[in-house]
Image (cartoon, rainbow, N blue to C red; front, side):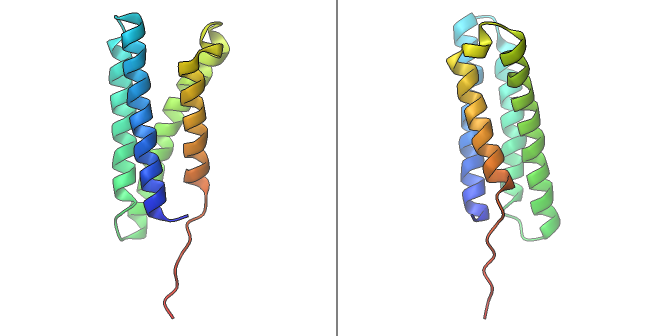
Length: 118
């Protein structure tokens, strides 16, 4: 796995987060907080993904931390919804975002392949 793959998967994750927030707004017609939550969580993830491109190692660690923070908020919120609300536990929207969060977590924790010059 390379940092480029991690960045692209994170961009996909951020797009999915925003799509699910908009989906919630379209379902209820009165849930703008879902859109704002999605935009903030996605912005944190994208900022982290952009830091993965930076050269110093501390920036890569910071980027990974930001993506992890975004993932903790998103997955935490939807896991709580899945277990505490009867209808949300079987909702396609909730199950879809939890699957995307699981994919993001696997990619985030997957070790990065380093290329040695020689």
